[in-house]
Amino acid sequence: MSSKGSVTKTYSYEQAVSYLDSVPRFVDKRFEGAKAFYEYLKDKGVITEGGRKVFHVAGTNGKGSVCAFLKSMHMAMGKRVGVFTSPHLIDLRERITIGDVMITKEDLADAFMTVMSYLEEFKSSTPYSDYVPVYFDWLFFIAAVYFEREKTDAIIWETGLGGRYDATNVIGYKSVTVITEIGMDHMEILGDSIDKIASEKAGIIRRGTPVITVDRDPLALDVISSVAKSMGSPLTVVPNASGITKKMNDKGIDFSYKSHYYNNATLEVVGHAVYQTENAALAVTAMEAAYSADELPFECVYEGIKNMHHPGRMEEVAPGVFFDGAHNTDGIGALLESVRHDGCRGLRYMIFSAVGDKQADIELAMVAESGLFDKVCLVPISGARGRSHDELSKLLTVLTDRQIYGELAGDLRTAYDSYRQGLREEDRLYVCGSLYLIGELKEMIM
Image 1: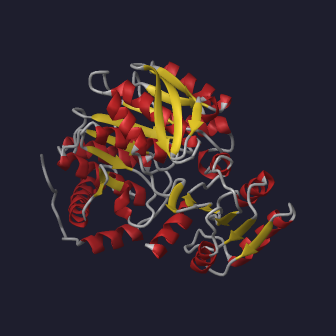
Image 2: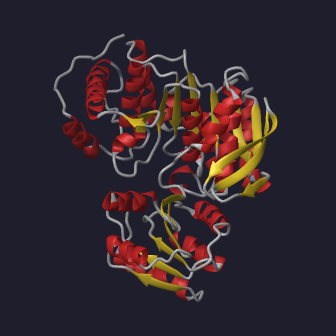
Image 3: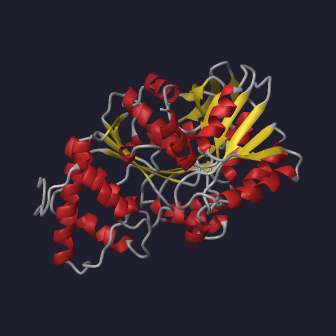
């Protein structure tokens, strides 16, 4: 296998990151170029397909958690599993891991140089001289090169946005595709209705490849079922969280699922995020579609589900303090359902922020109308997508109009320290509204 093309420059890790930060985040009509470049890398022997299990996961909410459950089960089986996810919270290397280990700085720089050199060859020798990989595409190709070199037993690809035209969808071979809950998000790109968004997500389905999805939205399920049928792809539909039999315990949730191999089996997720029972069921069903019963011992399934850790998703970072990246109306709804079961005997507080393209007014109305919180604090987050102080100030009326005490903090660190220091043992503090918020705060307090 070729290791590099005609390398024109040596990049350090810092130089590679600087370059990546300079490329566009979004470019229209880039998918054909990405597909052609992927095929070029295959022709050159830089990446190969086949010989390993490949899981492709799309959806609006829950896809990161499904990937985390899949990873954890593979690790329990003793497999070397490559995982590509997004976004990252602190370090971009979080997006490319083998098991729980991030790609090293040296390996990222080396894979970056390989992609750069072959990209130069590709653009000079094909009709795609104007192809411009965006930030996400670059990281996808870096991951593909890295996983190939590391000879992983399996790869888990999480889509970034949509599915049909996502860079991860250039891959040809897939063992199984998973489509999680479909909701109203990124409407300006994916469409303004559930069926349009579901159609874009269903674009990851491959002919004859098993499809796993959830029985949540009838419109979405109709679309996914129709596409699967037209592709001759066997479809399995798992119940949503409300249809899964579950029982809370001190440390987590025991739940039952209908296994293809073990009849009605009982598993445990740690923590009280009710929505994780649905994501776990999706992941287990996907594993059963990819592996035989002999290859997938039940103890590996059980341990994998119980030991899953997904930072920023109903993560208890300190006693009574939870970080959750819920960033759209469905995510907030799932968060509120979990909060109802948190066993709080005191007061509940929320620190909230959202980026500019989210329906923050609707999300805050849901929080206020739930009656679960005693005080909500709005905070600014950095970056071009963060909402300004004035925009957040206007959102306070959403709370006050519903008789919920709201306040606007000058900065995130001050707000967090104030609420954290005043928290009693019986109280709860939730930080949510954006994964960017979670990442910024984690970087501050680590």
